[in-house]
Picture 1 (cartoon, rainbow, N blue to C red):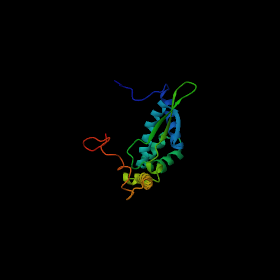
Picture 2: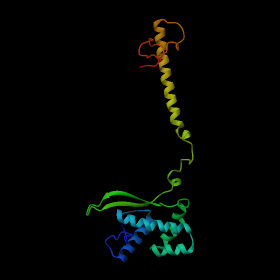
Picture 3: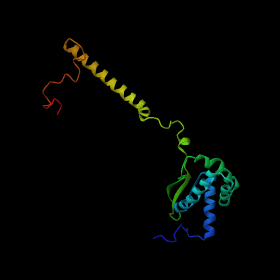
Picture 4: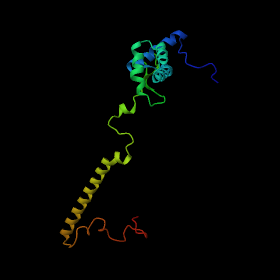
Length: 193
């Protein structure tokens, strides 16, 4: 049981830990991506998500609460004017942690803590709600063209072969599929074995 273990102490006093995490969250909102250890990133994520929720409220009280945590007025303004409106339709999960390896000196696991870009910003050219067939249409058309080209080549080859043998009639009658001798390689149902 994890009684009285609400957060990671990070081997620091309470005041040092608090100021360090506030500084990390301020840098995150200022640059939208910071590199730190995995444990610090997990702790800073809790505070950052809370600040974005305050930014979404947009009230004066929320602005003052955010200003009591963030260390720069310009970052508070950016949070309420730019960052929070980005996540208006999102219910949570505004940040992500990407592990990047280990620090050279003490082998501490490092990670990027970054704000998630909304789909509309990432995929500007893609229409949302487009049916799957419409997305696959160009590739299907290409496959059909290739198939038609191979059939044309087979028909040309068979018609040339029919003329060389001196056979009369349509080139389609002498196609590759009908030129097989009957009875060989077929089972009772008429399918190939």
